[in-house]
Length: 251
Image 1 (cartoon, one colour):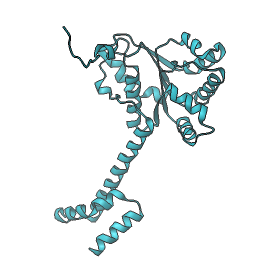
Image 2 (tube, rainbow, N blue to C red):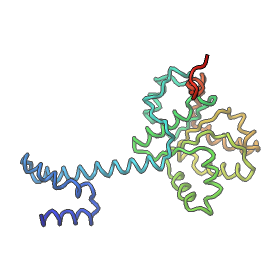
Image 3 (cartoon, rainbow, N blue to C red):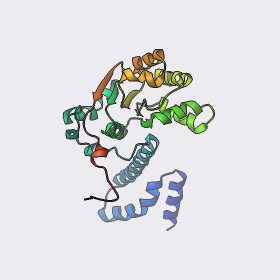
Image 4 (cartoon, rainbow, N blue to C red):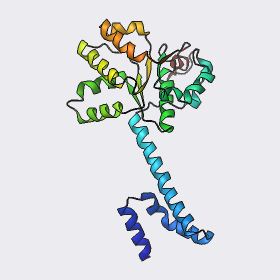
């Protein structure tokens, strides 16, 4: 009993949470199976590594801020045009991410642009990349407040060190000139260091209407479209097709 207490204390001091919780059970099992001391030590360390990897994955998922739907196994390529299943499988290989390629996913509302982008982000996280999902509105708030908000500055530094950044619904809010300029400098700073996945319901030619400055718009597009694959999705809105009502069918 004294040894167990000492081991538990040592594990707590060394921050070996998983070993501390399971060492007694694993010791009893090792006694039954008769494994060597080296095998027992290997099993203990394996338990701790598995626990830490799981916690690290949970932390990455939390900071990624993925929307509710991101499982690419549920993405039905047959319901839209523009992304056949063979191309989706190619994207999941993430070679474009290693090459610092960008993706622009275009299409009408409700067609699954965010679903696809979030799924690729999730896939990148599972593969060990630093990947984050942010709606355009959150990006703009972060840029406006990073000098006065510690949380915004932390997120700014986090995104600046990303391998992949998804910007969802990129041109849904109008920008003042200073905001557009701030957004350009953000994109420019990450250009060729980070891969972007952009979702939008507007063609790049329409972006100037939102940004309000042709020169800044051209500069942003110049960075995003360099080494870029544009995916144009067409089809019926998933949300409208599966619209629900509280009244059920009516006569």
